[in-house]
Amino acid sequence: MGFDASGLPGIRRATTPTGRSSVSRSARWYGWLGAAGIATSLIITLVVSLGRASWMGPPLTMPADGPPFEITSLHLTLASVTYALWLSAIIGGLGLAAALIAVRRGARPSIRTLLFAAAAVVAILTVLPPVGSTDSLDYMAFGRMVVLGHSPYVMVPWDLTHIHDAVGKSIPWEWGRIPSTYGPAATVEQYVAARLGGTSAARIVFWLKFGNALAFGAVAYVADRLLRHDAAARLRAHLLWTINPLLIWQLIAAAHLDVLAAAAGLVGLVLATGWPAMPAAGQERLGRVLAGGMLVGVAADIKITYALFGLGLAWGFRRSAAACVVAGSGMLAVLLPSYGWFGTPAIEAVVNRGNRTTADNFYQLFARPDGYVMTHIGVIACVVGVGVAIVALSRLPIRATAQPAIFVALGLSTAWLFTWQYQLPSYEAMIICLLILVPACWLDWLVVIRLTAATVALMPGTPIAPPTRLLTRISLDNLTLVVPITLLGVAAALVLLCLRSRGGRRLPAVVQLPIGTQPIGTQPIGTQPTSIVRPASTAQSAGGTQPAATG
Image: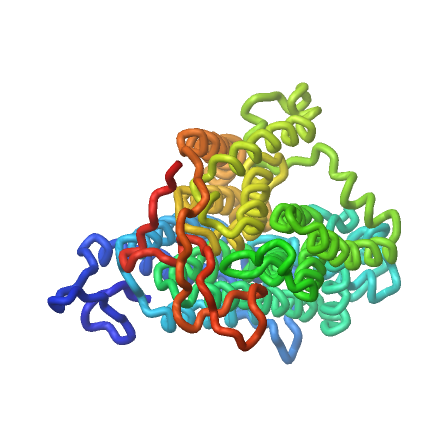
């Protein structure tokens, strides 16, 4: 990657009519810092993935004819990997922030170079074993259960060890006694991977990672096509998603399935509601609305929290009863049969999460483990979340310029993730897949801070205990103090910045779409585009700045 630096191939420099570069020196410096930080973070991710067997458990035997592959001669100590990964996350977060600043100040790196680098990293990580989390091994176990004729909502991963199944040695202990907490669509994907992988745990996980890579690429492709007429917005989207080292660590290296739901949900929203603007009430193409609703249903069928995207559809179609019914019917056409097939245990797995919390939740700062707050934390988090959602939906500065359905889905997802007591860094995919399609604002920085802090807290992601007292102390302080304070500060900043904002008002003018742009779902195929209201993010200046929200 390069940012408007002279002498580098593939870099396009913006110029003024006099021939001088319009990119400031600060933009170039931020660009180089961003490129260095992102590249360093990705290189560390690749190296630790290559040497997984030397520092991460449980054991994962590589198939004789791969993929996946690993370098058995590469020996890394757990201590060195932990320090390296902490450095990787911090540098990656700072690099991402610097790159975003550079784009806002006018830097224009080569999109082709950026996409090639991201594709190469994702491809390499896909054929390497999973690191940073044992969740993918749980997915593997759930898929294997279905292959053997059992339900992952009744059977638990440790049962595979007890029956001496071929994958039993690779079952992690953290979640070994808990049945699947994912939706039926996730179970189907895990079953397919298990069928393709056979009795090799490593091969099953490879197919899971392959599915993640396809979904990750789908989001990048959709964003690239939708934003192709706005260089600044297009670059921002690829920085936040495609080349984001923290997101790649979570979704590709660690193989969390959140990317599957994010891809289905995003495509469903865009397909159903159109882009860059929604069609007028009564002019919706109901076939697209049905297909989009079904895709949002698939997202919710993977992780039920993506039902919030369905509320975005409902808001977008609030003036069209027919479209609203069709979208809801599409979602139910996926959810009802799938949950009906797996039965009551699948429903209980979703609704019986209770007061489960993550180790770095910020509510622990206000309570003892056995006190009132932690005992009723689910109810408290719901009340706080609803309040934050009201503030975010009414006062976020992008309210007037973002596509309505996407904005509501983003506002609800942001409020939920910023306030819920059970939150993992991979969940940020739910926000970022929508954030890339709305105008840039201070929410970008809050999301980057959250993602960086939460990623550091859960690194290195191995069930093996830290090898030294110092690492144990630092890890504990991160989980119980540093990261909770950071997450609390970000949540507070979200509310305060929203309250300081006067929100948005309706756009006063009609904006002419660039020549050749065809709004998705708003006009019959073959007609010429006409003037329609569209988000201001697609009319940003060459410097990457955006109009300030008014009113």
